[in-house]
Length: 137
Image 1: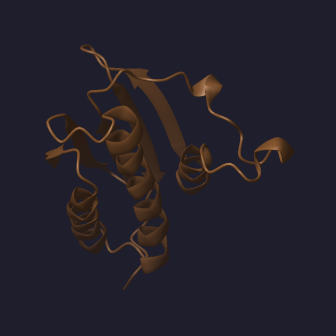
Image 2: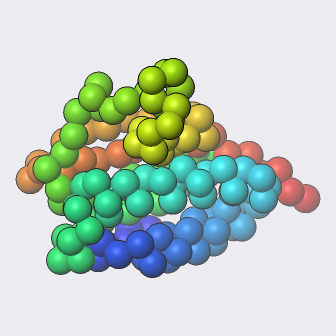
């Protein structure tokens, strides 16, 4: 499933609804769906706010792909990109009161695999993977 969305925070709910459908089809537990949803929410919010600078004319790309027991979620923006090394570690004592850097920390905590690349025409492409199991009867 592929979505192209304008950079508006309300579009995060569309992505979460699509994710919910995938999780229900795969019979994923509510707990796993919740944590994957948190990672997706953070990724799309970062693409809107930091990547596209809240410019509604710029698009956010989201793809949800199932391959066996693995869910791959790709979130891309049309912004200038960023350097991951420059994102502050929210666990460091000097950053405990800062609000930046927590989204990537959460995504890393909730997903099994995470990678950042630059898009061909700019922007950042975030690829997240989660191993799924059919957990419900």
